Length: 429
Image (cartoon, rainbow, N blue to C red):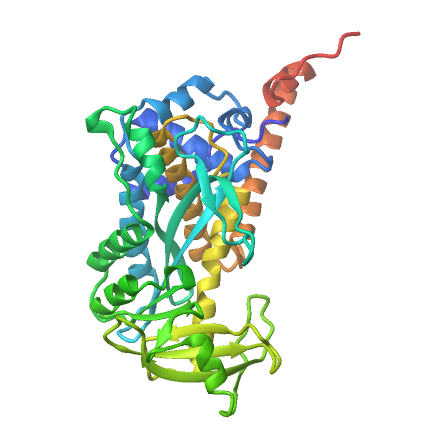
């Protein structure tokens, strides 16, 4: 494998300086090395060994492992600085007026590991709703995290994330832990509520806020919590929920005499796809405020309509579905951190070490979002993939320049190969 990092990206180093991390210099060096290598590496397995093999004159691999396993810093040290940074950056860089809307998206995602992985504390079997069908549930061995994304104008960041583990797994881990080191179980609702409460305290007054999520988060508790903050909600909702004492699936039949409203929102591939919609206002069971529910079909014969809820009764069905599609980028975020940055590729045993790995990967992704948000006209970045491509190209250019300089200086090809190819051995003659 050809080494791909001679020196760490100056832009990444500058970004980490902006975070003002309260960490030691060795800790920051390892965090920088892991984040930089995770962006550069195109291998399917981004383990510490693979990442540090990319760095010319890298420190010993055991030092990087110790930074995750025993070094006295916590994932919260990164998360807190990132939360503060992304909110401040959005407020400063976006020409926000009083009427600018802040969009908050909520989602969770499972990052798969091998089925035989049983010794890593953060790994467990999780219900995978993307692979499950109505009659056959599917479970994935891996890690699950909850994520909250914020968008203001055209700029967006991952605001925060948190690992989720089943209560049964938490109890099992705590049996082997000292009392002061025991983990606390938090449901997904509690995790989301804590993140949203933290975000609420950081936002200046005057922003209309809309919270977007799918039907898995449309609980009465979360609906009421968001409304208490003065925020509106646009979300998907399941057909078994009750509106004015009648299930939504029954409302689909009751409203069949009413004409459809044709809606044409732009979907993720930027094409306009027509939907047939009927709207009904009313009260959900045990929810004290009125909502608008949309029954959406792709065509008249569609027997499995989708249901959407909105607490802003002034919006039209076109506006509701157009706004709901703003939730899609959080799915793209999960693709990048899982597939391109190696979120689940850690091999450290303790929960705390795995949490540090997650924190570093999300730091790397926030850096990519920061470069995208502040890209110049010459860079012409449209998506995060463009930033990754440019980041890798800059490193490739540096490696080629340094290799050529060394070849000219020493005139010895073996010395160049030894320096820039990892685990290289001369072919015997």
